[in-house]
Image (cartoon, rainbow over the protein chains, first blue to last red):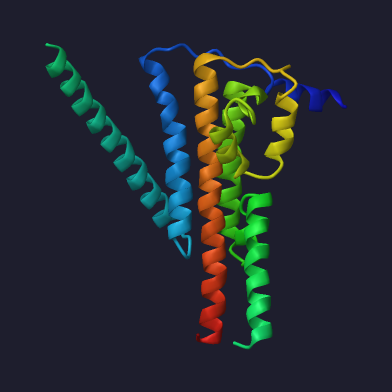
Length: 83
Length: 133
């Protein structure tokens, strides 16, 4: 196996160091972007760059806002039930 | 549609579905949707590789995490090879990177499942529109 192949495979054999902190929630953003892109691809029969990008950004924003609102509501419920 | 053309159509739909499973986006390429195919391929492969990079090959666990493995398998049958590799236990995997890696790779698989269904649906729709059925 060539050195380049070994180096590429080596990147996938050791886990990254990710701490359990509020910043780790940001890992959801690339995933939401992937979901928004693929979902819009399946819903758009003919893709035009500008309108496609616009729709992806709107869906991405909607998902993130909905998740933020849900998180706030759940935090409020948890706070009210423990106070 | 005649019986023979119906059979050919069913075979074509199966072929599109299989292609879409083997290589993400290949099903759309088979029905001449190049832009769709490129976007699907890049997005799904990138999401899957990000998951592997975060958690290591060890996150593909066909024994200890079977439900996750089934979702990961939707990416491509090639994932089964990675599953066999990780069974050797040579690849470290733990805690948060394991969780995030599994979520990324499984979501990529489920997105590919959506694309497989979509490619088959469009292939069917195109044929029925051409035949006016």
